[in-house]
Image (cartoon, rainbow, N blue to C red; front, side, top):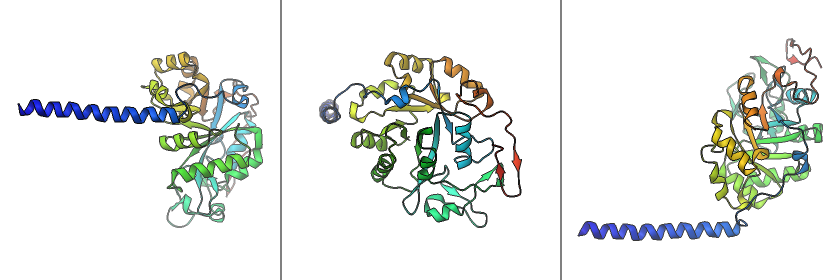
Length: 309
């Protein structure tokens, strides 16, 4: 008898909890503009020839990742897009660097985000174990230098920003200041960062990284105003079922794959994937509009690696 009463109590309150969550979800759907597709992408993305390539941290044949030299080589090799890792400095400037720590020539490793602009300029990046003359560049300097030569993919790192909502406002201000609304994708694997950015700043293009290719239907549950403009995942997570879902839902022009390589690129392309964050190798030359990679050679001086261009 007691077990029967306990079971009825459990079922009753489980129903209440379910109805509560359902009511909350329906409220979010209403606030989020209902279900449906995102607005069309800007022509800067839809008019570019496919496949679309974002150079992964630049073209790093001769220069360190995320350096001005690597970004310049990506432009020379004909990449239409560039993927950059973005952090926030101690004096509130966005700079380009991947790792949370940076090792100065002398001394212990430092948190990169604890440095000011002057501190960053005093650092020297390494390439193949050798110190170079390159330092972590400011995002503003790169954007002003290359202007509309690239489509940008900003991979946001939160090392210098504990408040994701303030980070969203800061990157929004940067994108607006430099008129990048139709040229820059703000990307993160942090779900709430992307959701907040989408809802509060609908003019900012966003990408949700680490997207679950095993359960892509979950995206349809998100209200329209909360949905990211793009989704992204590792090449190793792609399945036939996922690529079929991309075709059926028309999401092929909103999916970006990363970690493809020479071995996996062609099969991935044949599966219908059209956008890649990828490391430069010569096999890509036939797809890049203007490749100046012939004759690339490595020149080493006592202080840095230099490109022959």
